[in-house]
Length: 581
Image 1 (tube, rainbow, N blue to C red):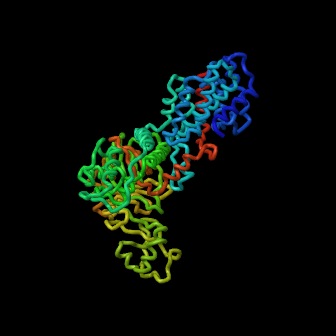
Image 2: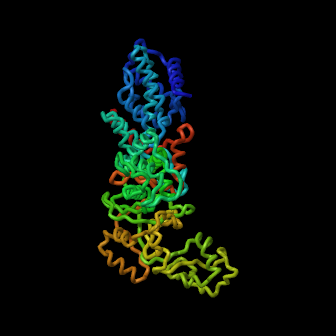
């Protein structure tokens, strides 16, 4: 049903069930009474409607109006307030956040306001309950939009099995309504609910710019062909130069030198490669060509999906914290909002995805054993050992019967390797500490249900690769000693010299982490650098499409409004009751 038909039905609804006042004015007391009557009609229902518009906030909205004695916020005796018009404009722009305006009654509110304006010009009387109905719809729009801006529209755990959503902040949308009443603008009140991080708002601006680029016709497409190396001549060079110019990698008005791939173009391509997580070699091979041909509309969708991921994050990441962006294969150690350490990391393969969660780091282990996980033993190691039992000695493995550090070891010679299998194996396999150990010389523990941790690795050459989804799910570190120095900085007993000496000693050592350091395992395929340049990465786990589909599922098709905790609601309502007395 289009909105004009909805408005017509709404007017018929109020015409049939509401008395018209004798003139165009509605008295303030009568307006509150109209809100009261409309709310009382909802009180016995878990799901209710105003005309054709479903009210999603439900009983929370009913209690909100009861505690404010049914005083309207968005309308007054002479009609809609300026706040109502500002809210209409704001929810119409919900697409800038990757949200669906119709989830917040956007089109119907706009048409409704236009209808009221036209009747005001014609001095046509308005029913008190019609204004009350608009009041309820606008409050529902604010509450739903505010909740989605604060906590996200989609529950990540409903679409990602390896995503543990943090619940460290709760939308205080009723408190935000106070800021509207305190003469703040609607957009300012809603911004209070949105992620405060500059990265979020930088992505919002980038998405708007990409939308403009899309409407202007997008970017030139480069035809497939042989790779282009510096110094080559190729008929695609003109399109390449235009493509790089439109995205700001070349100055405005740049003219390519015929079909020559010269040094200026090479440097621009290298910058493009760096901003897209590619090998920075200046060669336009299949991966670089693929990224060059991604259109602004596709990039915009990528950004909008990542805005939702920002809304899932805690508002405060911690005074001292570590964040790992799996999609970027990158770790940052942060203290007082300053990045103290950066490094490359290796993350889980596509079929052994590194999960997403936030947990406090508890301890680190120097010279660790590697207790071979049952899954790896069952799928891989048992077959290697049956073929060559000498691998136990070559790779410094041992078979033990228990889980303690001093568990007795079994003699491999007592095992009939021709008959044994994963189910009948008489112990477990672990790898001894040393430079050969799969965990390297240090592992960092933040206990979690996924049994994922960060650790060193003897395979240093792998960090030179651009694509580093190579592990069984844990995070391998390029600079483990540097991270240990960062983690133990507040413990006067530990410094780099002592950490390195302990490693050389070769004995297993567990060290508690002083203070509170939170590890945030994240997944962002787009973000903004401090210099204002947008970064894009491949969606290695194919999570963007699933999220974008969920974001664009209408509120009528799925329960998308986060449920507010009763305790929070009662606290806010209590404050309102106090203010009303």
